[in-house]
Each structure stands twice: as structure tokens, then as C-alpha cells.
Length: 374
Image 1 (spheres, rainbow, N blue to C red):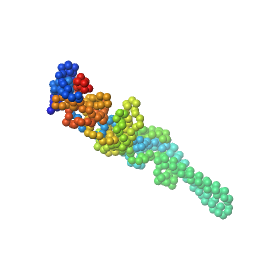
Image 2: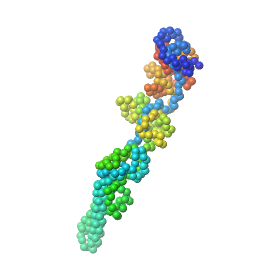
Image 3: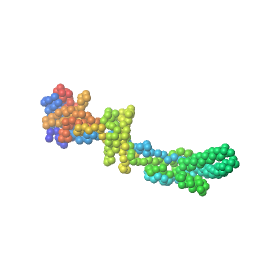
Image 4: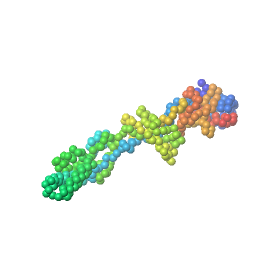
């Protein structure tokens, strides 16, 4: 076949004296967009051809992407009280279940919380007894109504104080069962266990055993690692074809995701737009890794082909490529679908059997200009 991409002459002779070859060129034009060229002349001009590679008609070129943890699935376990971390029960990367111990603390503040709770419980019991006596006395006309109403108000306040102190203990990590045991046994402890609030993976530990921390200080960072976000940097010039809900495929990963955000702003430094996809994670994706992602277009297109960027010729708004014929080349108009610095995706009247010029383009275009077709 003429101009076969497998011919050694096309692959080995990439640097030539184009200007000298062009001066000696005897080619003639058979049509405005065609030119005759022998194999020897094409070789001397450094022309190399490749076959177009079929490109999925509904997917973009691969864009750089970053795998990140969705913010709703990321949380920090903080110190419920001021104190000292005496022990860590987990390490980075561990998977934990809801209620599993993460760290143990010793805290004077925790002791004070328990004491204040028990004091509130005792006061509530005392006020309840007083209310019961005053109720009986009122029924026997032994006390005035205002005395009964005062007792009722004190009882309400005492109940509120108990509820408040109980909630403080819950915030410190005590379960209702533990609080009930504290109420009945009055066994105050200086040791507090910090537990995982839900199933997750430990992604960071901010403290060490023996370290003293203030209340609300970060102890351990947890995350749910499925699904994950794939944040894709798409050139602003290509963003029009991408819509929310479009399918996203990460190279090397079988499970597709879906676009959940197309940013309304452009990064001024890179002139790219953030596209965020949500992808189910079976364990093969890891937060922090980089990847390449392809995004489905909003609508189907005709057959598309991927070529090296150097194959493309632009004349105003029109894009074209040089396709080899039996005795030369013809200029074929194409539609540019996608591009990056190395590749283009085009559609047009070409097939994977055609051979498209990817080097020596300047020489071919110069011939057409000389013949009045460029």
C-alpha cells in the first residue's frame, strides 16, 4: 500500500533538508485539495504517517485528575475534655467500627463533670421529696398555694440541671448505660475512653501518648473511603460538552462514576475548570493519588478518531488533515472534538485504514500554498 506506516523509510528518515527537497519538487496538483507526490519525494520531505485510532465517540481525551475524600465523609474526633492522652488504640490506616476505642485520656475536668452530675441528681431527689411533702400539705390545707408553686418551680429547675449534666457526660463520650451505672454506684473515674462515632478508616493521628491536650483539640481524623471524589482539571475551551450527570471513567479502574459538579469558575493560572465526579470505591482507588479520567459528552457524536496533535492543520475555523492516496495526499476537512498538548480527537470522512500525515506537514501545506489551495 502506498505510504504504508510500516515502511522503514517512513520511520527512520525524520530529519531532512526540506527546503532543498521542495525546490526540486516536480509535483503537480490534480485538484484544489490534492497533490501528487512520489514515495521518494515524500521521504525527502520527512513525511511520516500513522493510522487513526478509534476514539470512543462519547468520551473526552484523558484529563489529569486527583482522588480526594468527599468533605461530608471526613471528620475529626476531638478531645471531649482537657487532659492527657495515656493510650492510643489505633494507627493510621486502621479500619474501625462504631464504638471502637480510639484513645484513652485521664482528665481532672472529667472528674468534675461526674461530680457535678451526681450533685445535680442528689439535688433533684431532694427537691422531689420536698415537692411531694408540700403537695400533701397543700391538699390538707396546711400550706398556701404559693408554697406549692415554688416547690414545683424548684423541681423543674432541678430536673433541667440533671438533664444538662447528663448531656455533658454524653458529649464526653459516656453511653446511657455508663451514666446509669454512675448514677447508681457513684463510682467516679478519672479515665475516659474516646470511641469512634461510626465505621471509618483512620487517616491521621494528631497526638501521641503522654501528650496533654485542651478540650476540643484534634485527636484522630477519620474518613469514609467510598464513594470518593475524582477532581478533574478540564481546559476551559472544552468544558461546553460536559454536563452534570455525565459518566466518568478513571483509567485503570473498572467502575465508572458520575459528574456531580461542573465549576462555574476558571482557574486563572491554568485556565482549567474543576469537574468533580463521584466514584464508588471497591478499594482500588486511594485518596491522594493522581489519575487520568475520561468524561462522557452530553450527546453522541459521529465516529471519532484520535491522532497526534501534529497531524492537525488549522485554516481559520476549519481544521483538516493530510490523508495519503495512491500517488500523493489529499486535504480532508475534519471536525475538532477535543484536544490537548499531545493529541486531538476528530470526526470526518476518514477511517482506521487511512494513513494520516503527522510530520512534514509544513512542507505539504507549502506545496498547496504554492498551488493556490492553502
